[in-house]
Image 1 (cartoon, rainbow, N blue to C red):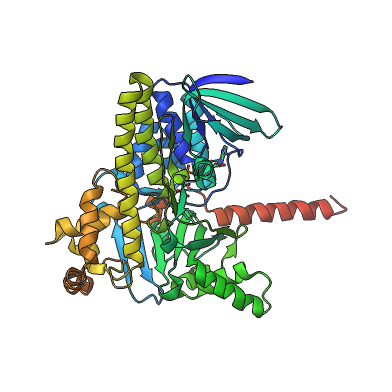
Image 2: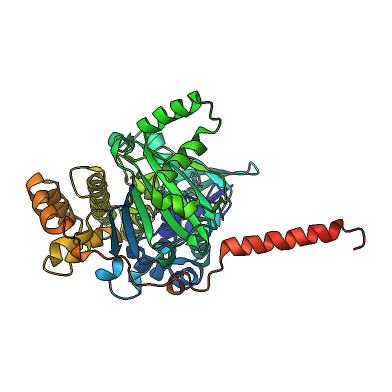
Length: 481
Ligand SMILES: Cc1cc2nc3c(=O)[nH]c(=O)nc-3n(C[C@H](O)[C@H](O)[C@H](O)COP(=O)(O)OP(=O)(O)OC[C@H]3O[C@@H](n4cnc5c(N)ncnc54)[C@H](O)[C@@H]3O)c2cc1C
């Protein structure tokens, strides 16, 4: 079986569905092949405010506002709980964008993919891309797929987009995948029900607890629903290996579970949050951290999202990097389809100059986070607020970075980061800003109603369902009934 379209896209996560939707909106014939059946679980639940304009353009904002928890900012906390800084998007972003989202990815990704179908994309789920010929005589590409019933198909297209996420379909085949060795981390994560929501979780803040030292790690606490919290722990691989050996020597059977709990309990803040909570799903282990593809595009292909690069998720940047890249690439591919190879090449060069700049900026900001002699986001209390006083421009940069201003202004922020890396400048900055606690803020000023709205309490909902299932069972057991 063979079909002919303008563009074939492999992968239906945020990068693939966004590329497909923009191309379909521009009138192109698009087929998207996704190996899983949605909704499917995925890690990466906290979004940045800069996603907002794209989600609005895609036409999904109303559904998101009805379904997901709102996120007014980020709080960085030191592991001992002594220092913390709350960065509120509302300090620099006005209007509804100041409130971002925390999402259940299974549902969020499904909303985006269903929306692609609505816009005219031919979406085939349970269909895996197995091969692609990029150098065909006479132009175009040939993509081969197989569905989960074993039916093989061929798809002829003028352009191929790889959005296969951390499977890195093309980078694997082209042998262009390279690791960021200095960001060699892995994450352990799961959801909790019935957690203690006090201390900023009830205000929708993403909380990041910095573990410091040899762990080079941190913990995320994300309220994904009322009463349901995602908690993940990111650790250096070297430390994980060492702890694994230690725990196994002690006879611990499930070392991942033991390590996860050990790290969570090392933070008094997280220990309190989970004190009376229970785990809601199996623990996930995400390794294969931080890599990039040396080549991200060619005459007839482009790679977007995690398939092109993945960087440590400390800034919660992945979904935004993916959908913004997808928007830029879709625009450039549209130029190629309409105006031909030469105009297309110039447009794709320009799109990737911006994309590569954004990834470089995020990479630098992440290194800043892990650099013990540089800025500590948890101790930058003054910085978070002083920027509204006499140091507006320089310090607003911190807020804009955490909100996702990575693309158009990446050069400006790169300069800002370079400045903070210089010991002398940093010392001055520390004296003036970091040690000045008089600017500390404890809240972004939102209450639970604004953040959780009409979203049900999942812990209570589940407990209710369990109670009524129990009641039904005991009624069924009753010989008199
Ligand atoms: C531990 C961790 C925490 C994170 N936290 C955050 C966060 O808080 N905020 C944030 O924004 N980001 C976060 N991220 C990053 C975020 O999850 C990703 O950047 C985002 O999912 C990338 O989207 P994507 O569409 O490129 O890839 P994906 O969402 O992975 O989608 C790729 C799709 O391709 C499909 N596929 C793969 N191979 C094939 C094939 N051969 N044929 C057909 N289909 C195929 C897969 O089934 C999948 O559905 C985190 C990541 C990790 C690992």
